[in-house]
Image 1 (cartoon, rainbow, N blue to C red):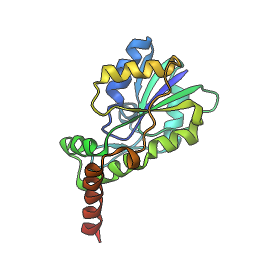
Image 2: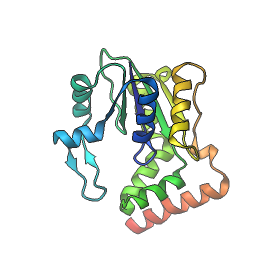
Image 3: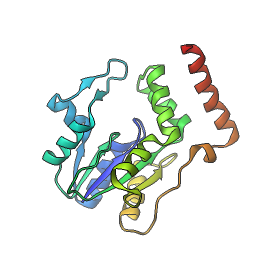
Length: 191
């Protein structure tokens, strides 16, 4: 089995994935790092992220990721013949804004990733790739990576079904107003 820890950039996939792999006794693969080392993607000058196609992701998983592995990536793809359980880490979009700004992401890249988190783009992609019963959400807002890995273990052991994350419904009114104001400002600036 491959445990795919997914989510938008900045939610903590790599850190949680490493803790989870250690606790499971599995190998760990940080997919963006593999892509970078193998020179298989293009560098995004704004964010410094390596851009890669889903075809490349599938090839790497098929050739280089063994069973009993934890894989970390914001991209998810169906890999025929492999059992995958995917845990999508979710983070309050306003917290994500701060993290991505601290990383030096430009305004456009911050907004792109925050919008993806807000609408649950990675979760939706994961459900399409692996099926609803193999995909779980975990809200990591305000919890440490080791505690998040513990929650991932509970999901894998069948003790808990994860979180039901819907930022449109879950965010308090004031946070929603701040987030929508941020989206509106960015749209006005690009109009």
